[in-house]
Image (cartoon, rainbow, N blue to C red; front, side, top):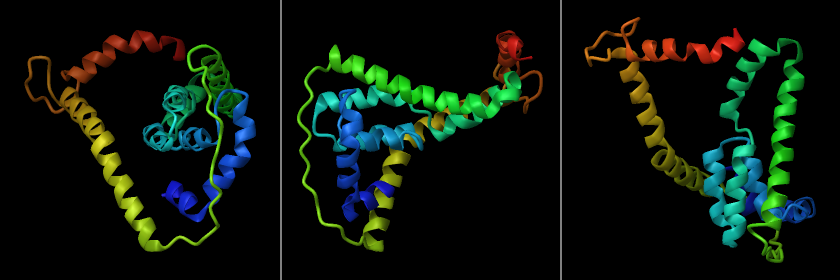
Length: 200
């Protein structure tokens, strides 16, 4: 929705132009900035947004950098680990993870630019006029992106949820136990607990 709002209002072109100088040294251009920035919200949506990049090498490089950008779904995991291991430095640790990810993304982008994806096309963009965006157009865009998200990502989420439900409610003999110590999930957790001993 925000992408459509920025595009249709003419603000996206201006922000891309302003951010181009920051991205140029690491082999990216201003167009890739939005995909990487939206990765802080959702990596899957950010990967889908790279379709607007005309250059195939830039598109691949941007997708390869997205794992370094911490999406909002990872934050609860970071907080849990920080509370368990480093409760005295939680804000510093979280800031370090986000800034470290950004620094790693820039470093990897520069390495990819100098090794694998050497060709970086010149950044040329038409500067559209600033204009208001209608509610009808925003609603249509929201419907389209929600549909795409459900089709592409919803199936994976549904499959994982069903697998966890099955593992949590059935025994290894495939008998319904309704949870508890006889479930597959409990036995898997019991086996994996040794990996988490360092966290207490």
